[in-house]
Length: 122
Image (cartoon, rainbow, N blue to C red; front, side, top):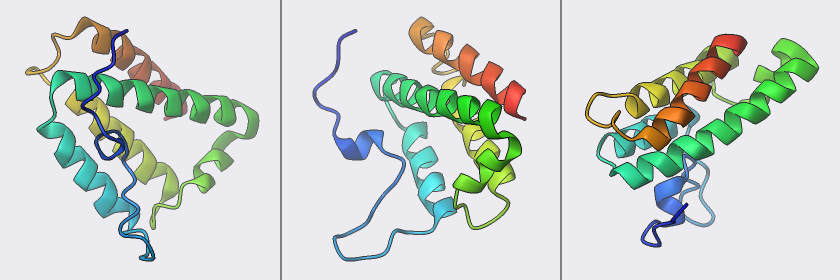
């Protein structure tokens, strides 16, 4: 795999920690801002994002098998942890699978597994 060096950590992270010494913004607005960023992202950014989120979902799945529904308590969403977390990953999947960007076969392999994991943990 070839990595595009132009990506920065701000391109790849869904958690905006804000300025040094300031509080982390609330969970939902951070996630919505990241989703908005992805709507305008290029194919390579979407590929890296999908790979990162698949890695996260694989960890969630492993923990879900180990501890069951308690896995959702780890997410500090400010609301219903399970519902909010699944909303976020389903929203990501919708972006990754959108018609405009679905032609990327590499991302297609990632999104299939993302969908499978979401089916299991839902």
